Image (cartoon, rainbow, N blue to C red):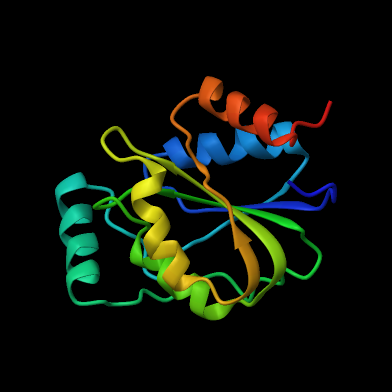
Length: 159
C-alpha cells in the first residue's frame, strides 16, 4: 500500500447502502468524496430499476453521467464504490471509466451486496481500467466492521 495520503472516494448509490459505505471510508481515511450521478436518474421503484439496469447491461448501453469531468491527478488512492448488479458494477461505471484517465493511482473497489462478493466484479474492472494504475483486491463493504478490517489491514485509517 502506498504511503501517499491523497485519497478519493467515488461512488454510485441508489438505495443508500453504498453511500453509507462511501461516507464511512471517507471519514476513516480523510478522503474527498464524489458521487456519480446519471444524467437520467434511475427509477426509485425496485422492479423498474432492475428492468432499466438489466437492459443497459444486456445491450451494453452506457448511461450518460451528470457529473462534469473528474480530475484524478491530485489523488494517489481512489476508492470506487458501487452496488453489485449481476455481480458487477452498474453500466454507469463503464461510462465513468471511459471519461477518466488513471495515472499511477491505486484503485480500490468496494461494493455493497447481499449475494455477491467484490472478487466477482474485479474482472470487469480490470477490463475497464485504462492507464498506469494498480487495481487492489477491494472489499465487500456491507458493514462498518468489514470496512474497518480492510482499512486497518491496508494501513489506510487516519487517526
